[in-house]
Each structure stands twice: as C-alpha cells, then as structure tokens.
Image 1 (cartoon, rainbow, N blue to C red):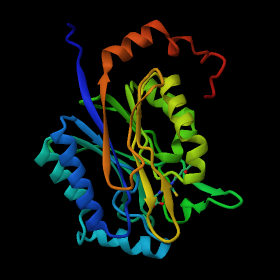
Image 2 (image 1 turned 90 degrees about the vertical axis):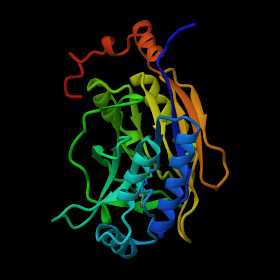
Image 3 (image 1 turned 90 degrees about the horizontal axis):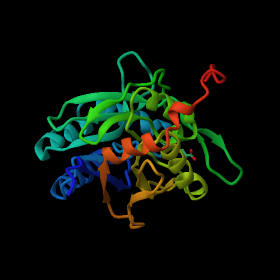
Image 4 (image 1 turned 30 degrees about the vertical axis):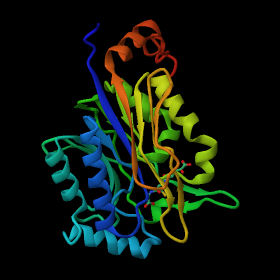
Length: 283
Ligand SMILES: O=C(O)CNC(=O)[C@H](CS)NC(=O)CCC(=O)C(=O)O
C-alpha cells in the first residue's frame, strides 16, 4: 500500500542494583533481544549502571566505573555495535575536576559511537510527608544546557531525564530545535508514578507532537528504594503505543514509529505555529 518509513523502537525495563556488572549483563541481554525483534533503537532507564543505597556507596561505585573496573558504558557501546542497534541509556557520568557525577542520558549509534550526552538539568529534591524524600543534588552535579536533538533511526531525538518531564519548557525547547522524539529515561517513585507518570508523559507528547520514549526502572533496588516501572512509548497523538508488563523481570516493549504520521498530524493540528511567543517572550 504505502511506503511509509516505519521503524520499530523498544523501551527496556529493569531493576538496577549496586552490582554494575550484573546491571550491564541485563542491559546487554535486552539489547540483543531488541535487535532480534527488529528494533532499530532501544531505550534504557536512568541510572542503568547502578542504583546506590546511599551517597557513600554511590561515590565508590562511580569511581569504580570510572577506573575501568566495571566499564558499563564501554560494554553498552560494544553491544550496540555487535547487535547493530542504536541505544539511549542513563548513566552516572564522572568528569575530570568535578566532584559529583552528572546524571546523563547518552545516545549511542549502531557503530558504537556516542552521538550525544545530555546532563540532567532538574534535580529531584523533594520531601513529601510519608515519602518520597530524596535529595538528588547531594549526590549529583546539575547539568547546565539543553542538548540539540540528534538524527537517529527513529528520527530527530531530543534527550531529557525523569524529573525533567515536569518542566514543559524543556520539551518545548527540544521541539523548537527540531525534535521528533524525546526520551525520558527514569527511575520514578511508586507514589508519584501512580499519580503522575502517564499523565505527564502523554501531555508532553501531545503538546510537542513528538514521540515520547520513557524507559523506567521497576521494583526493589535495595532495602530503601523501589520504583514504579511502566516503561512506555507515547505517540504524538497521546496514545500509549507500548508498555512493559508489570513483571519485575528485565523486559522490553516494542512499537512502530511513523514519522509520516507525525508530520501529517502537525499539518492538521498546527499547535506550534499557533503559539503566542509574541506574548510569552520570556518563555
Ligand atoms: O538516584 C539514582 O541513582 C537515580 N536517579 C533517580 O532515581 C532520580 C533522582 S533521585 N529520580 C527521579 O528523578 C524521580 C522523579 C520522580 O519520581 C518524580 O518526578 O515524581
């Protein structure tokens, strides 16, 4: 019938712990699975390299990864190349001269090269009665810039992370820079996830008319933390077109990405052209 340029994308779901090698093995097995199922790109959650129980453990794990003892990112790059598939993955990124790691979303091509690195802008500092209570800025350095979208097999892709999904100025900026998809790798809390996860992600997709890729961690990481899961892909109309099951076993979900559909929708319902940036200059 038509020769629409449709491609398959996958979102992964897993439970990272303080065992970097075990987390890498899980990610590599899901890269393989995504590739075998025909996906051209697989999206992994925030902090897929490790979830630490406390700041001190996180500090040690970050240094161990950087020292090459557990080269998580190197392992992901090799797997992307070996299985010929693009990857987006959330990691802790240590930079020379900076005390605390960045919380980063790295896009890797099917030749195993890093094509973009985004450092989380909005850190999750919250204190809700009966939890969650988290102070991300105690263990993470905050990013300072929006990273322009990059060309991938699923179209032009902008990067954000987790808590960033509550700040539509970022998704709007990425759309203005040409994004056809936005990724939000996440480790969402169970309480806020049940109330806000689907709503926020669908809203970001609808208002920017982009595909939204939200790979998330699920289940119990350690004695103190467990996460909401529900890794999903939303299309530019706001439909959830893939969702991982509620199993706590590592898994992926796959959906078709149709950029012709995206662009015809933008022509039919031209939201961006109707913006009043003359009035909202400061945004
Ligand atoms: O700490 C790590 O190792 C990995 N990073 C996270 O878990 C981050 C920072 S604590 N989580 C979130 O941003 C949750 C946001 C959220 O749940 C909400 O916006 O409601």
